[in-house]
Amino acid sequence: MTFPFKEIFKISRFLALVLVISCGEKQVKEEVVLRPVAFGEVAYLGSEKMRQFSGSAKTEKIVNLSFRGSGIITKLDMKLGQKVKKNQLLGSLDNVSARLSYESSIESKNSSESQMNTAKLTLNRIRILYEKGSSSLSDYESAKNSYRTAVASFESAKRSVAIQQDKIQYGYLYALEDGIIATVSAEVDENVSPGQVVGVLNAGTAIEISLGLPESVINDINQGMNVKVQFTAIENDMFNAVVTEVAPSIDSNTSTYPVTVTIKDKDERIKSGMVATVLFEFDTGVILEKQLVVPTKAVGEDSNGRFVFVVDDSKDKIFVKKKTIIIGDFTQEGIIIKSGLKLGEKVATAGLQTLLDGQQVKLN
Image 1 (cartoon, rainbow, N blue to C red):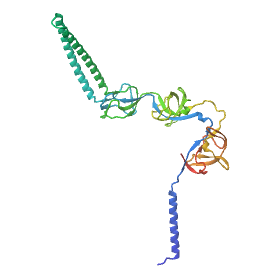
Image 2: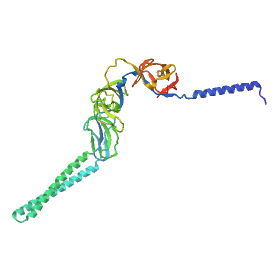
Image 3: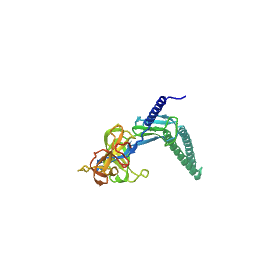
Image 4: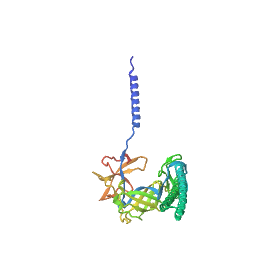
């Protein structure tokens, strides 16, 4: 069977159209891989005198709550965020062993008291006989020693009763200060040992920021130094604070010097554990002439002169735009810009020779 030429041509056109459509669909589905770009910001020369470091907020006094005795928890009146008062009962143990020991100590005390009374009667009887000449001096001295031993045993038994009575109190957990329960790490019917942390109490009223500073700036930090603090969770607000502690030695785990900053402003929105940024101003001198500076790595050079790639993130997609600039002197903070850039603009700081003008990227 043969097909007419016109039919064959129509079938060929149809197959070609299907192929073009399927190829177009595949191209649409291809995911564009965006190049990550490191960047820096255009700043004023001398802005290095203002440094910021991250830390975490905590109350000035944190108390780990634990029982002094061991046993099974029968009561636990602690919930996250619960406000408690000083001496408020927070939990109790079954205290079976402590009560048995207390009862045993009372029996021992009663027994030693009986022995002491018997020894006293014996001493009185032998003393009378000795005074009448019916008993020897050795018998009298032996009776006195026995009585002294019985008295000492009774006093020891009384102290034991007091100690065992105190140990019963080890099965009760009280709040040592007014505060807020920050952590609960035990439950009713759980068996705990002495010193095992069952909760954490934030007892202080002031908020502190703990952070670590490098050795390059630690000599510029002093107790009483005023700083500013910002919190990621509290936007557009800045709080006054003061440096209260500066460690004299480095922390071997972090290779930084621990520093504590205390917030002077009271605000209920500030909570323990919040991430904070502390701003230190190391030089309060006024900069007479404000000069723009960019990182040295952000400036490239081609046949047209010096250039940078400005990051445009004002829209949904991020692009880099090549811009010619005029530079000034080189400084420790970067290169001074005479023209071509504005304060706060973002500039790429890596891969300048492979970036393209107008290329879509993502920030690294």
